[in-house]
Image (cartoon, rainbow, N blue to C red; front, side):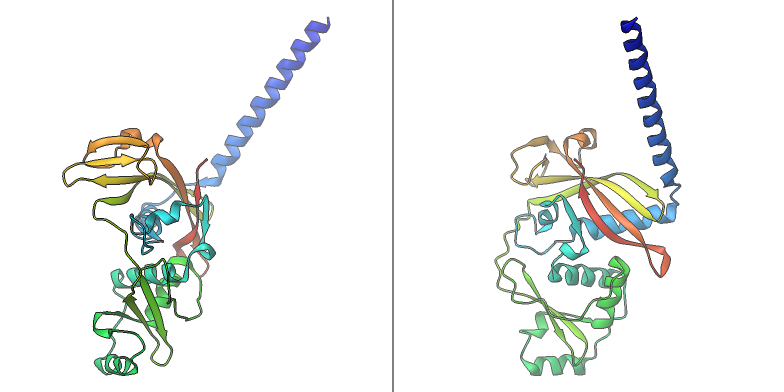
Length: 265
């Protein structure tokens, strides 16, 4: 009789567990909404062109991009000022924002003698940088310089008088090589309420001029694929994965901006 009661109890526990699992997946499914092609394209383009390389410019062998994947979680406040300005400058240039700076202002900046060789610098309107940061991160920043870096190869100066950002190559040693780079493959992009989440596989690659070896780690110790010509998607499960989360912008429901990057454990 006691054995029968134990069996009944185990069956009951199993049924309750199964109901719990079903409820979990039903709720999870309800949280996912159908993502439009426009939303998917926007999110994946932002991730591919900007968010996967937010730390570009640090003096590592991978041009600093690997710095982004040192932590298990990254939000906007974790990014350096120089990184934010650099990605904003890249975005502003590609988005073809108005960046017309008169030669008169250029000459006046030269006359100040504060920002190095202006002829070799890149200049951006402050309004363009602020708009780019708003478009990418939905934040309003205080205009300040990001100079005197010891591990970042660009200095960004802000000239308040003319509302201009000046980007110059500094004296920090650049350890990047033309053979090593960080590659990625977007696995899945889904929408959950007002957020879009993309799961991305990250790989460290070495190209010898003909073929490429792909590694799981930045030190090149864990080989995943050798002598290939593109990201080895057939072995994608062997790479570390990160979830890029974009949230709907507060004042533009058609725009999705960076919220976080989290390593899948």
